[in-house]
Image 1 (cartoon, rainbow, N blue to C red):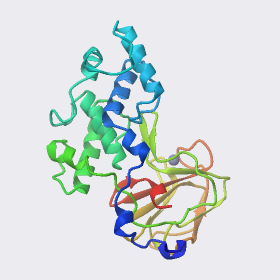
Image 2: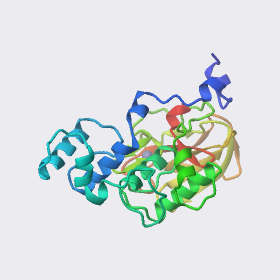
Image 3: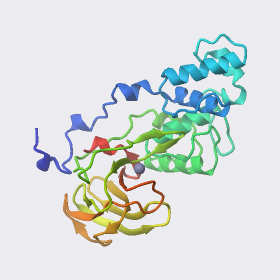
Amino acid sequence: MLTRSHALLALASAALAVALPGASASARTANTAALQVALRGTGHYSGTVDGVRGPGTRAATAAFQRSRGLGADGVAGARTRRALGGRGRPRYGSRPLGVGARGWDVAALQFKLAIHGFPSGPMDGGLGARTARATARFQRWAGLPADGVAGRGTMRALRRPVPRSPARLLRPVAAPTGDRFGPRTNRFHAGLDFPAASGTPVTAAGRGTVVFAGFSASGWGNLIIIRHRFGLRSFYAHLSSLGVRSGQYVGAGARIGRVGSTGFSTGPHLHFELLLRGANIDPASAL
Ligand SMILES: [Zn+2]
C-alpha cells in the first residue's frame, strides 16, 4: 500500500476506482424511496427518504394499509400501490419523465439523481424546474443530450454505479464528522459536515488552484472552492474567515480559512463537498 502522503491525489488503482457499493448502498432502492415519498404525501411517514425498507417504512406502510382497510402486512404490494392512487404509479421506466410529470416514477427519478450526485431539492414526486435542471446536468455529465427529459437513455445511465473519488484527499479539519453525505428528511445532504469550534483551521484537502474565495449569496456564507486534478473540486462552506484568494495555488494541507457559521448554518461547522466533473460524490470515498 502507498503511504498516505504518496497516495494524496494520486490516481487510485483500477481496482480501487471501481465502485464498491457496500451493503447499505445495495439495500437502498429507488422504489422504496418512491414509497417513502408517497407515504409522506399521505401523512403516514415523516422519516428520511433514504430508500431503505426498515422498520419505520414498514410501520408507515402498515398504518396506511390500516387506514384504507387493507391487510396491514407492511409490504407495499399491488393493492397498496393502487390505494396510493397517483402517488403509487406509474412504474419507474414506463414513460419518459419531463416537466409536469407526477407520481411514483418521478420520486424514484429524484432519488436516483440525488444519489448520483445531482440532488434537485425536495424529493416529492413532482417534476418541476429543479428536477428538470438536475436531469439536464446529469445528462451532460453522462454525455447524453441535455434536454432535461429522463427517457430510456437517461434511465440506463442512472443504473451505472454511483461515482466515487478517483483520488485520496486529506481530512480538511481536525474534527470529528457530523452529518454524512446522503438523504436528510426529504432532501439530500450533498456534503460531509465537521462540527468544530469557530476559528478552527481549515486546510486544503489536496493541492490545487483556488477558483472561488468569497461570500456566496446562495447560503454557503464564506466559501472556498479548489480545483484539483482528475476533474475534482473541493468545496469549504460557512467559513468565519478566508485565508486565500481566487487564482492562488495551494498545497495539500495548506491552511485556507477558519471554521465558522456564515450563511445558512445552525452552528459552527465545516460543510465539505467534493465534486467530480460536476457530480457531488461522497467525500468519505476520498478520505
Ligand atoms: Zn452540511
